[in-house]
Image (tube, rainbow, N blue to C red):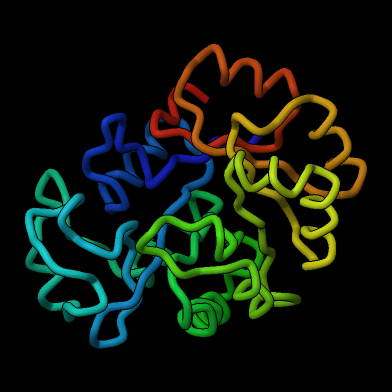
Length: 236
């Protein structure tokens, strides 16, 4: 099973997420995969950070898209760490862990793909995104953007429980197949044994997010999920 460190190993409440140190900690704690988020700076750099605003995860303020990478690099992202470049995360960790790259905004898919191709990482990455009606308020990604990676890198459809309930599992799975997805990434509260079996029968892997309760993690193991994402990778 993929033991996926959610933004590394930030704990909960999360602190020091999406940093080189957090990813190192996740691997040290047993993760064999890392999940992280990508956005673009004002000067066009691809950086690893979850929110549009830097306020929650750093000692600074302002939006990522309004700040240059030099400005971002002066911020403390937790424990003295800096906001890393996507390039640095790829080169530091692709040989040690499977990488789940979460596309957070419109317009960056092609540049992410170019970087994957440059470093020949097709077999070490999985690209995921929420649909446009299932995003956080400061996010504008969509499942449509994942078409950029078809045939070039595997993709996964991220979905909240509410989105899956609205669509229904059969429609969600058909949508994943129609988009040539390699996997689905449902919220862990949305999965149950029959749904996982049907997904497997259709050739889809099931990686769930974000499970932090040991009892729930045991249940997910018993259901046969292919991967689980946690703020505490040592629990996986």
